[in-house]
Figure 1 (cartoon, rainbow, N blue to C red):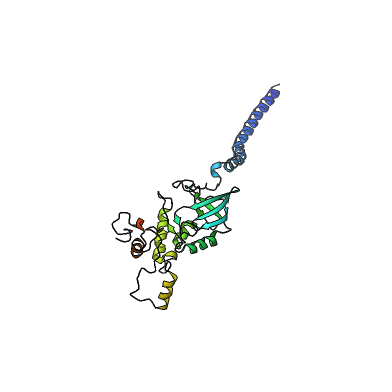
Figure 2 (cartoon, rainbow, N blue to C red; figure 1 turned 90 degrees about the vertical axis):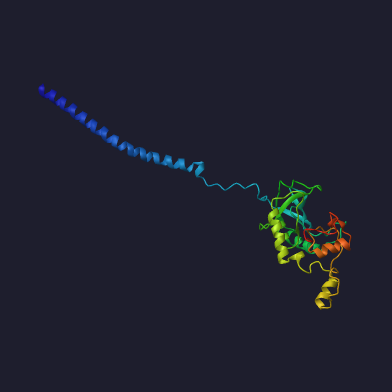
Length: 269
């Protein structure tokens, strides 16, 4: 009987010890298993995190419209027709003014045909991007859309025409977005005598022929190569001599706003 009791006690003690050891081993294994099972969960969370995704920058509001519009007509160097959503729209370009060629009220101005030809070369049957300028409004008084025009290669056409001497910088009432750089472009064209700023660009053919043949004389009237064009403004006039000729010989009185006998004070100081 005693032996049986001892055997039972020994069995219970052995079972108790074995059970404690087994549980201890499970406790040691559990952290490793948790780390294994939690790792995919952490990876999945990182992949789904919006902050870690690479997204392209949003387009700033001052960039040109990304859409390309076909040019259906080139009126002159600063006015074109484009097709927008199946509708034909006339575009008046902001910040530049090319010499007149198509206005029936005005004669063809100096370098106007060259400017018009260059515009057609760059824009005819091409596609362009457009950029609005809130400082200038959506349309002018003739219901033309007011826009900057970009060529497909990214060239800002408005500025290009000025810096190459095909157009003047033009500010209408209030400053516009690119006014400073357009003015700098005109100054550069003047200094480099490009296009309409070239020495003989606006000389009459007869004067050019005489000069090239060496038959001109010092006694020749220095104003003979100027032509009467009272549509010119002071910023379009290239010299004080031309301004005085237009005032005195052509009676272009608007050049002498204060009526002091001196035209275009900005160049005849």
